[in-house]
Length: 334
Ligand code: C2R
Figure 1 (cartoon, rainbow, N blue to C red):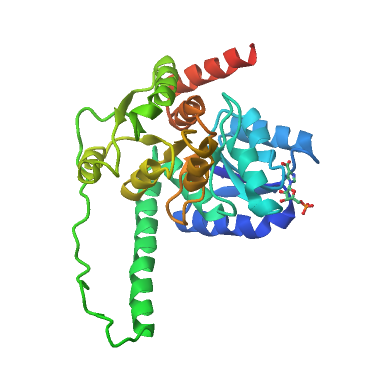
Figure 2 (spheres, protein in one colour):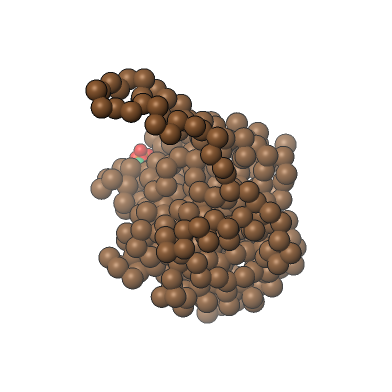
């Protein structure tokens, strides 16, 4: 059977992170393959693996690497399929690997998850496959419920352990709170670009122009989940058919975090450089907790987010695949 996902470790020493991916892919029932190959130590192996795997039908690549993590970028250089990068903590808390994965130049994005987050990489791969595979979409929903139950169980156990004269253990214990209900809406585009503020619009426009050129059906909106909290929920509830979200945000990147909290679709995050050169937004997008991944691209790199969105859609859409390849080849000629 041709695997849908190929996991490549820069070294067998990255095994513990790969095991987190494996655990999730087994739960999601997605066939996968595992290889060890280094862009630095075995460059030819990486090249041939990726070209052959792409030709044979592998849909998503996960590159796991520490230190100067050039491996995911090298994978992206040889395929037009989505590449997810997992930075590994080798030195300086894994920041070197995180930057190596996220800060890829146009048009070669690596969707970067948090340091050591092999689990989130596999969930993101599952969400990507789920955009054209209903069975996997339903497995993703079941997995999300498991993460919700973990929170509820955690609260129960925490309270069991606590005791205090003034502690009101029974306050607001009703768990039947109302959840956001998703509805179909006629104008739902395949890709929704959401900018948290007008100051992010330039980057949003760069993503939009590229999607337009690749004939991807998209919509661009400005909405802040902090400044319009309730409107944001109502807005998201009408996006049942959207296949991919591109969330563009500076500062604490809450736009991207709020989208992934409400949707099971792939979320691509673009950190913006309004403050701290965008490092705040980059870190708060990539380092999401297990269960809710944001595939983060480089700071201010709206164009790479558009390429990633097209790469996801191109798995099941030949027209977009042709347009995507044309853009990639055109850039190679520059
Ligand atoms: P060793 O334990 O083999 O010395 O590797 C590996 O992913 C690992 O985390 C130490 C670290 O080096 C990383 N490595 C890369 C690449 N190849 C190996 N970042 C690459 O090609 O990017």
